[in-house]
Length: 271
View 1 (cartoon, rainbow, N blue to C red):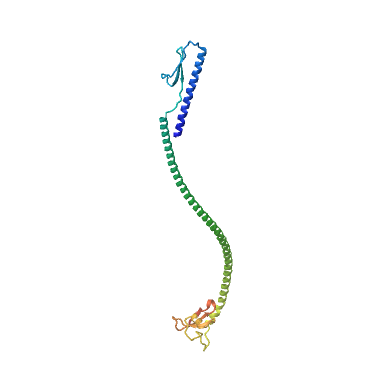
View 2: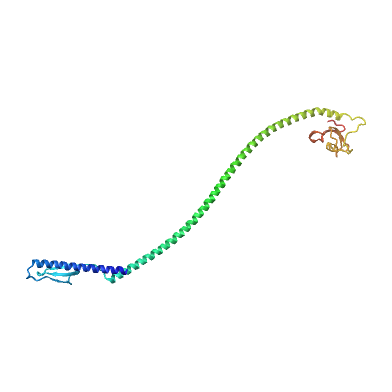
C-alpha cells in the first residue's frame, strides 16, 4: 500500500510538472506572437500567479489590461488523506474477509452436518431397501410354496372326491349286500322257526339228557354255553337266576360270534 501511495504521489508530481511546462510553452508562444505583431514600443505582458482565481496556475496580463488565466486541476490527493482512506479501505476489506471466512466456516459446518445427516439417511434407506428386498424374496418364496401347497391340496381334493365317489359306490354295494343278506337270513329264520317250535314242543326222548355246559355247570344263558366250548347251533338247557329249575332254548352259536338265545320253551308254554 505504501508503494501504491508513492506511485500516486509521483504521478501527481509529473502531471503538475507537465502542466507547468505546457503553461510556459503557451506563454512563450503568446509572447513570441505579440513580439512579432506588436511594435517594440509596447510593453511586454506580465506573467504572474493569480491567487484570486481558484485553481488558476498562472495569469498573463497584456498591455491592454486583458488577462489570460491558465487553470489546472490535477486532483492530486494529499498523502495524509490518501493514507487514511487506504487504512479505512484496508479495515473494511479485512472486516469483509473476516466476515466471509466466518460465513464460510458456518456454511461449511452446516454443509458438513447436512452431509452427515444425508449419509445417515442414505444408510437407513439402503438398510430399508435391503430389508424390503429380503421381504420381497421371502414373499416370492412363500407365494411359490403356497402355489405348490395349493396344487397339492387340489390333487388331494381330487383324490378325496374320487375316494368319496368310490366309497359311495362301495357303500351302495354294501347296503345292497347287507339287504340281500338280511333278506336271506329273514327267509332262513322264517323257515327255521316252525322247525324250532316243533323241536321245542316235542317231548324229549326218555332217558335223554339235555345239553348244557361241557364242564357240567348250570349255564344261565346261551353265552355261558358258548364260552364253555359248546359252539353248535341247537337246543340247550339254561338255568337263569330267576328260574332255577331251568328250561330248554334254541342257541344260535354262529351269528355275530354266537351265544345268542333265539327262543325258549317253559313247561306248559309253546313258542
